[in-house]
Picture (cartoon, rainbow, N blue to C red):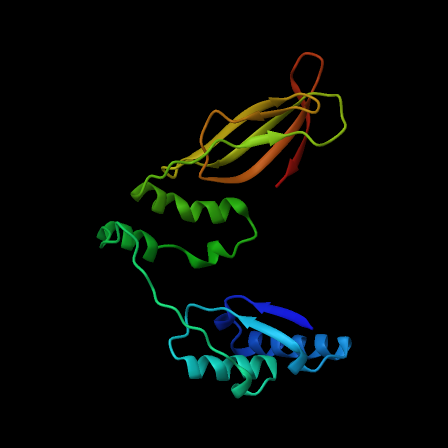
Length: 194
C-alpha cells in the first residue's frame, strides 16, 4: 500500500492539475499499482463544498467519487482576532505578487518590508555554525530584514569548528556571504551561499 499526500490540492487546477494527474498515473503505472491500492490524502482549506471536493480529487487521482471520504472542519478565530488597520490592508494589497515568485531572496524579502513596518515583529538572532574542516577563520556576513522591515547586515567572525550568533535580530535572512581571514584578520576571496 502506498500513501500519497497532495497538500494545497486546490492549486492543482487547469494545465498544472492535468500534469499532476498524469504524473500520478505514470507513477502508479511504474509501480504496478492500481489507484484503488493507494491512500490519497488531499488537503485544502479552500473547498467549501464536500461533494465538489470529492469530484475534484477523484478526477485528479482517477478514483471514483464514491471512493473519496471528505473530512471537514470549522474555522476558528484566535484572540485577539479583530479588524486590522486600513493601512495594513493597503500594504497587503500593494504587494507585488511577482516578487514573491522571484528566484532572488532579496526580492522576496523586500515584499515584507512595508508589511513589517505596519506591524513590527520581533525577529530572532541567527546562529551560525561551521561544518567545514578548514582551520582558517572566516567572516560571515548575514544580510536580511529586521522586525520593522529595515534592511540589515552584520559580520560575524567564525573560528574553525565554532559557532556564533548575530547581535541583531532578523525577521528574514536573504543572503549569507563568507570570506576567509588572512593573517592580519582581513578578508580575502569572498564566497557566496544561501
